[in-house]
Length: 444
Ligand code: AMP
Image (cartoon, rainbow, N blue to C red; front, top):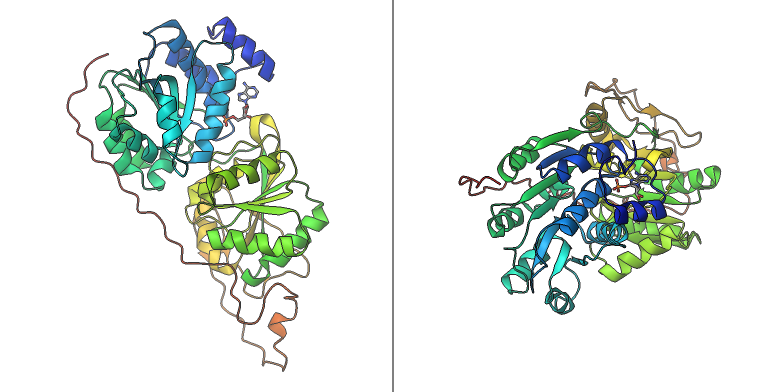
């Protein structure tokens, strides 16, 4: 199968040739004809499967082939993304695919001044990529009208709900014309998402390119059990031993990101961090420098790293396991993309055993454990398996303590006495399901 046989027009085929896309990925093969035929779509596709082109290519074609010119302060298609980084990235892809088309594209998101965005919208844009909060601001300030909107794309819909955007989505839903095409993409499909889809979509075609909630099988995954306090030391040890060149590291909290970056930089390691507290420009710069290999280690929280597309990333390290098991799939989806192989290593301490068990249950696999010599944990990580069982072995009787507190002998410079590992209270966002006005939808 080729992109031409899917019915794409010549300017798009030319752009794909420049990008080196030869064969459609499975999600593209299914989504492109359905979207061109005007269908609503509910697609379960992992990151790295090519889903962006799956919706963007047919969308660009429909906008080129049909519909009036975009009016002032209007958009003909809207792509909603959960984070600024993802909005930027999706916009960059859309702009590449659209390079030979007479269409305008633009991305808006919070954390930067709204005025230039309002100016830019004056002439209208064909495709607008937006995060939910900024979109609502622009709408309320009359900088954007949505009555000309013909297509809505919800990208990473599960993450939008996880981030607490359910109210914003309900508000946006009320702003939209009833007659429209809606495409919903999500790496994982919870019951909340299915409910949202039931309200937003009209007779959607369901696409599932990989089994539900199964992690990318191009990624070699394993776990290294370790005591919480020795994680930074183990990370540096593994980095040096494996001669890691480019690693994306996930930490649970913003403080955790900062603490690890400080420690790595203190050792002269070329590291940077991204999280939600950093200004957008700083985050983008760190990401660009990581992509161009000027930064070797990028430490990120889940929110900041969501959906980032970094070509040929060989390795992802979970310095902390994610609180939400589904994030594990998103994290390791940063590697093993577009047919490449990758590795995902998780440093797991005894406190995280329930998270490990939840991940194994979700991904239906028991992750291989590799004990690192000299880092065997004093606090054993209980056995787990894909059934969700945590097997707690009876504790061994404690040896009498010798003087000198042997427990900290290997901590080196990483842990001052009284310093806790980088942990702050983990607040899981409350998942709210939007309540939509479910009046009858007009038939298209
Ligand atoms: P996505 O899942 O949309 O984030 O895409 C993941 C990566 O795969 C991106 O770097 C795309 O540029 C790349 N990609 C998408 N579709 C194709 C294709 N058909 N052939 C080669 N690379 C692709």
